[in-house]
Length: 151
Image (cartoon, rainbow, N blue to C red; front, side):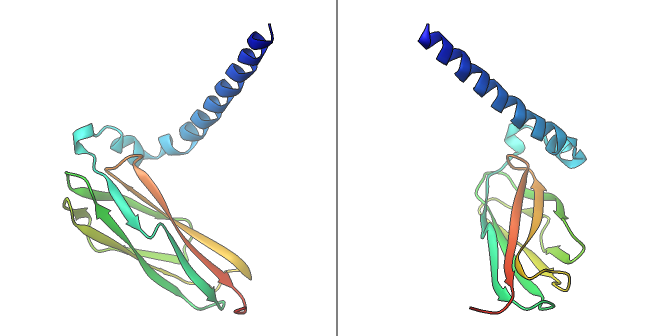
């Protein structure tokens, strides 16, 4: 009887976790029109990519000091990688991609510049979302900095 009770508790815990994850996917990811179109691609049209870095840390800065940098994307798959959409959260971020399509075993860059006039003292994060022909169809890149006096 004790085994049966534990089994029931574990079953309901697992079921509740699954429904929460599906709710997140349904509400955010699956409603983006670009993601919906990318999901129609065949498995043979998808590639594998790697980023360097995934998180760009700009160290300690003063308010108003712009942050400039780049993310490198390596195409590690067999088919060309293409960027379908790049999204940033705020107007303070300017993003530029040199190539829209990158061949297998090649790389491309995402250059960014962030104006920091509206940053607050302390830790700040800005996110850039890249969408393309790879699983899970999007990746979130972070730019982090600390605004204040260097310690």
